[in-house]
Image (cartoon, rainbow, N blue to C red; front, top):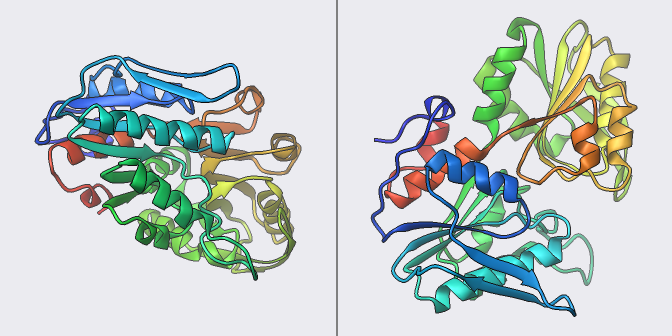
Length: 331
């Protein structure tokens, strides 16, 4: 029997295989996370070469026998998104041609997820295209974390597990804060379901930021729905990219009487000048997971902190390999 997430975070995850020997293969997107998952499972990473030719074409060679194995490919499609996506596709193809019994694409951060619908005339639904590419490359199932939109699971014609970082965040929030003085805040109306779920787990009240987005990458805070006066506010979202929404939300909450403002975000994309924007803002702390490998600037930022999702993903991999329930991780 596998341990719970909380217990498992303090030790190793026992794994048993029902679909052949378990193999872990990693691309170049987040080697630190892959090593951490490997350590949690007490399984070494399979030896593989993922490199570039002189013209930047990607070459993959799996250097161990994977015939009949249950293989988990760990690869976020983070910046540079196209390179890491191609690495994932080529690794899957190499494993399929090497006769792996089952291939699971473990994608902690699923790039292109924000393009989940036609945003205007003559525009693509790129998330669906990427789902098709992964499926046709030869993946048998997908495992990802906090999809930007839950319906993306339906874009795949193969089993897809969407994990949630909330248990990791809840544990950290309970350790750090007096919950009687905490209010969970959704930075926009679209994230209310996610924020409400976390608020329910810690029995905290909920507030919502009503904002109007004038153009992509920019937002204007219009109103705070809820009485935040005297509370320590925790903003909850799946992605922080430019950081503009969080900074504006923090300003609005403080202007409405909030004591302090923290943010718990699953995927720290933090592109462009986002790190400088966050470090110079009134945010007390931004907490992100290691679903995306942090840059040097992120590591040095005084008010940005990381939570590891390696135990959570390791537990999910172990349960998948032994054909146990993954959803019960979040009950």
